[in-house]
Length: 141
Ligand SMILES: [Zn+2]
Image (cartoon, rainbow, N blue to C red; front, side):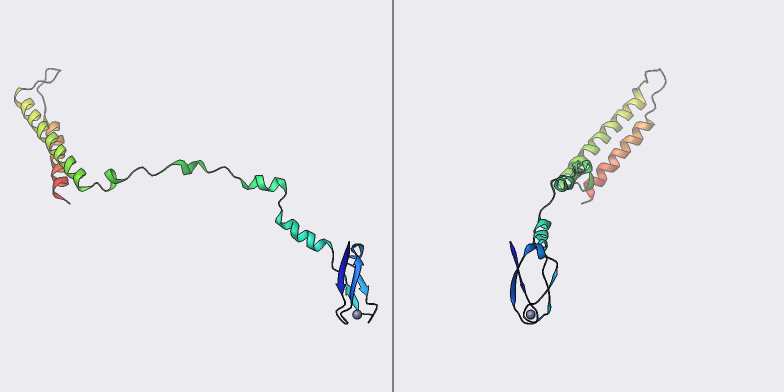
């Protein structure tokens, strides 16, 4: 294998053995110094495109397990649709109404399991809560 070199001064071309690569020669025509390019240069450039076998495996990292979680919370809890709101509003009103009716029944005829007088105050509060939520969901757009 030979290396082609050219004198910068007189443009005389030479072919030298590749074992002269990297050396500085003297031009036979004009005496100028000619640096023989290292034959390895080109090969080293090509080698940059290749990766050692160990390097490729390092790049493959395991995917982060945190990415598995997808956001499932969507329409119902954050922004319920009009129909959903209406439905839950009616349901809340119905439940509230039933609880009010039950509380009234307990107030007059009910008996707690321990024999004490039934206290439907909590039932009234919850019922009013249901009624309030149902009214709110029915009225607001
Ligand atoms: Zn020369």
